[in-house]
Length: 208
Image (cartoon, rainbow, N blue to C red):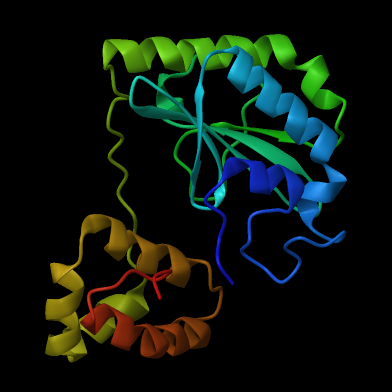
């Protein structure tokens, strides 16, 4: 199934990433009024509309500013470079358990977009100003503890160790995150076995 490349398709059919694309069961159908409100706010702010990762992405001065997403239980406005935002209203949530900086507004009702319109506009303006100035968020260095099972596997398997240490830091972290999410040592060992081929191939945990 081909993912969308035209932003209009997202608002009429969905993202194209699952079998529910262009059906009444697509998650975008449930939240379409709220998604259209978000689109209007972004376009009124003067942002350039495009598609990235099969979702509407809004840009300014050559930089990604915001991205939309629609799910079964909610729809979301994700801000790019959230480390630059001053969350004066305390509305931002992290994207997931491994997110370093809160940068998302989650909506569980379509009328919530209108209720939060002022803060959305203010946060977009913040990021647009940073894009024009070329400012970037400060880099956050976060040490991640490698699970004992991975350390032992690398010690016992020189080929795996060489390949793992040749990965980019981001790819290394993807495996550490995936393994640390498993509570049982046996599960972590099983995952290491499944990951070995990807690591040797130079890929991250989520790459195909």
